[in-house]
Structures are given as C-alpha cells and as structure tokens.
Amino acid sequence: MATHYKALGFVNTREMFKKAGGGGYAIPAYNFNNLEQIQAVINGCGESRSPVILQVSSGARKYADQTMLRYMAEGAVQMAKNKGYDIPIALHLDHGDTFELCVSCIESGFSSVMIDGSHHPYEENVALTRKVVEYAHEFDVTVEGELGVLAGIEDDVVAAKSIYTQPDEVEDFVTRTGVDSLAISIGTSHGAFKFKPEQCTKNEDGVLVPPPLRFDILEEIEKRIPGFPIVLHGASSVLPQYVELINNNGGELQAAVGIPAEQLRKAAKSAVCKINIDSDGRLVVTGMIRKVFNEKPAEFDPRKYLGPARDELQKVIIDKNTHVLGSAGKA
Ligand code: G3H
Ligand code: 13P
Ligand code: ZN
Image 1: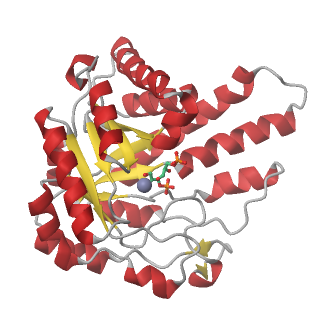
Image 2 (image 1 turned 60 degrees about the vertical axis):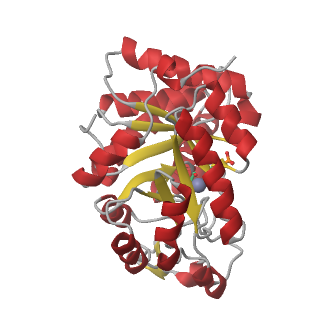
C-alpha cells in the first residue's frame, strides 16, 4: 500500500531551495546506506540546525534492502523529534534511472526524486524527465533532473570539456520538463579520484590542487534561468586528513583529489541550492575503522569501531554545514 511522505514527517525540497536560494547557502544532501551513516547525518544536521536531504541511491536500496532503508529514514525523523531537533528532512532518490524506480520510491514515501536522464540523447532526457515530473507532482513530490554528464576519471580533459552542461539547453529543458531543480556539470565528478594528478598543481604542502570549477558556465546558466535551484553532484572535498588517516593505517589511496572547500562555498553562495556528498563520508568512516583495527587488533565488537566512525562523521557534517555549505542555523 502506498504511503505519502507527509504522513512520515518528511518535506519536499521546494521550500528548502527557495530559502537557500535567497539566503546564499546550499542544502546538504548526504547519502546513507547503513545505521551509523544515517545517525551521523541526523545528529550532525540536528546539532548544527541544518535542513537536510537524506539521499538514497539504487545501490543503497539493494545493499540495505529498500524496505529496511525506508523504515530507517522514517525512524530517523522520529529520532530527530525525540532529540528535539526541529529540522526539515527530505527523503530523496539519488540518480533514479527509470520511471518505475521513481514511482516505487514515491509510493514508499520519498518526498523527492532525481530522474537522471543525462546519459540519454537530449529529447529522450526531456521525455523521461517530463513523465516522472507529471507523476511526481500529483503527489507534491519534487523532481531533480540533470543536463550534462559528470566527468569520470577515465575521461581525458578534451572529453570532459564536451560534457559540461550547455547553457543554451537549460531554459528549454526546465520549461518543457517542469523539473523543480537541475543538476549540472561544471567540473565536478563522483568518487575520490576526481582529477588526474597531471590536471593538478601542487601547493607548498605538496597537496594536489585541482583546476577550478567552471563558474563561467554556472553564470551563463544563471542568466538563462534566474533563481532556478541548481544542484551540484560529485561535490566531496576528499578531505586530505582522512585520505592520510586511511593511508597511515594500511590503506592505499594514491592521488585522491576532490573539490576544495572554498570552491564549494562560492557555489553555495550562488544559484547552487543542493550539494551532494557521499565520498567524504565513506573516507571518514573507512579511516576511523582502519585506525581502530590498527591500534586495537584484538577488538571485535562492531560498536567499538563503527561508533567512533559514526561520531567522527557527525563532526565532519557539522563542520561542512557550518563552514562550507552555510546551512547551519538555517533550519
Ligand atoms: O552518485 C553516486 C553516489 O555516490 C551513490 O553511490 O551508487 O555507490 O551508492 P552508489
Ligand atoms: P561524491 O562522490 O563527490 O561524494 O558525490 C556524491 C554524489 O554526487 C551523489 O549523487
Ligand atoms: Zn551524484
């Protein structure tokens, strides 16, 4: 039986984005796959009084079981209430790739979905996105679409250039599809290896500094669709201290590079209303677990290594909301 998101205590993203757009900050969208991640997200956003988007990928639904994951999200709303956190919480499908997946999420109580048709030819992307919007809006569920393809590490610089969002397409796309927000490609990419070392320079500490995001493209997009909520995927900073923590405790992550915090701060002050973060959480959790395993090889109680990982992730989330996205105190 279908459940409407309002009955579960979620909100859609419309009001969140309206406030963020006018307020010069971005709403954090944190992915979760398990208990410790969702606890860290709710506690981190609750403590920093930030609105939050709980983000679920189809991979997460497969990993944790879609029913389990949905009930965890419902439980998170209750936990927030019990703790006195008065923050808006949206439950969002990340990178939905079919109409049927979006319907399934909406029926189970998601308040927002992404239909990612960015890999399809333009007209197919428009048609698929329009179909999802028509269905979702019947239930007041908000929809994120995407134009432009995020670079992968396998793309060379020339290929990466050709997949930036084309400003000339955005007005037509948002008008014809009716989407509520638009994910764009301006130089970010998913994962912990966003740039090749040869694309970067080194700072005085030997840390790789990537080329800047294409704010010129963002400005052109803003001119075409003024005030429209823009979404940035692939926005983890790949925090060097956690890459180092992993490597100092037996890991092997070489040349991991993310998006510098200052660039995200600049984006958050512009039309970017939603910033997606998954990889940073993975790095924090992995680093902390490796540290406990390394320092206490006899430890075998999962709470003793998952607990510190969760607590550290909560701290990182508070820091991001406060110093990078600017969403702290905006709930
Ligand atoms: O954009 C991708 C997200 O980081 C989700 O990753 O598909 O491995 O769950 P996943
Ligand atoms: P990161 O891999 O940079 O964390 O991006 C996550 C994301 O875009 C989820 O949709
Ligand atoms: Zn993404």
